[in-house]
Amino acid sequence: MEREILSWEDVDALIDVLLPQFTHSFDALLLITRGGIVPGGIIAEALDIRYVLTAAVHFPEPPGVEKRFAWPTFLQFPEDALLQGKQVLIVDDVWDDGRTIMTVRGRVEQAGGYPEMAVLHYKPDQSLFPKHRPDYYAAVTNKWIVYPWELRRGGEMVRPISTL
Image (cartoon, rainbow, N blue to C red; front, side, top):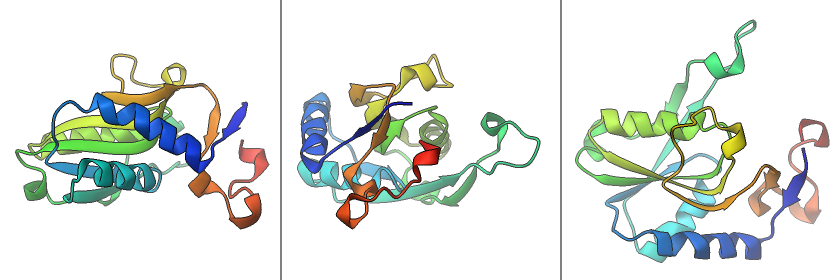
């Protein structure tokens, strides 16, 4: 898969595409760790949202079970009372297959919140949810995106080339 290495300027440009799409206010931001922390923080600052929460989801890969059928484990998630009745913007860096953000969305709905989803990059060809897409996205791609926060000092990649 072809990869695209982004600069901080590229991320700023993507955020500039997202911000005008938000035509109403949100009560809270829910950032998916780890990829949603940086863009979510930038969005929180730009929209002056101080109610910022995090969610961490892990999809184990048990032997003999296809990856997409793995049941998620929530390593971290806000209490229902923190989401109930709130307009919640869920932020992640990329919608690959969509499992993580859709799982978080379902959990927000279950808590009585009103979720909307925002990502920098949307990959519709890889999505496991053909009837759903992010409410807000800055770009559509099929490339493997490498964000600047995924680089080590000196430009060495955090992920081995073999996984790309």
